[in-house]
Image (cartoon, rainbow, N blue to C red; front, top):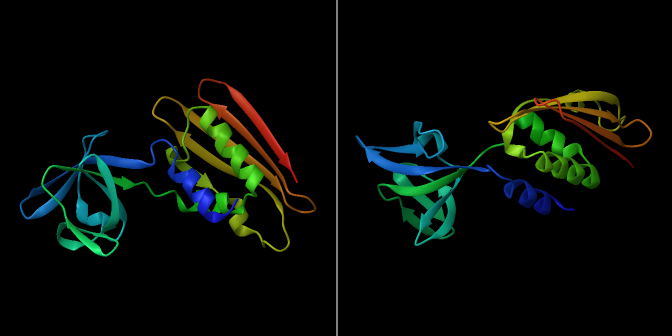
Length: 186
């Protein structure tokens, strides 16, 4: 699995976007999140990828100043009360952790998380102990990850042993008390 395939799997996860409408108020573009009804300045997303819904088709582009979106060689001007979606950014430590997992462990982790009705984008905390280890020497340790899908909390302990073989063990514990363990040894 190459980096492109991994990104596609992450992007296809539920709740990967904040979706809402934009309005031009007092010479500023305001983003109204459909899910939370919170308002924020669109300018905080400048130079990030956004999708604009026009004629029931999502057009992907890079948000620029003054309500413009760079779509390849074309420049789109945003319209008042238009629907857009903004890709959620993963927590940096989680992103680094996912990069460290081999393909099988990565796929098993994502599948198990999804089977419990959680998305990788539901992560609210990640402690990645791997960032403190020398990648050439390997190591042993535990990473802690917490997810919140607004119905339940999922706490994950990722026990790893990368000294002689690559051993990944994920212990999922839901706030309901349900527990799941998956282990991948290479």
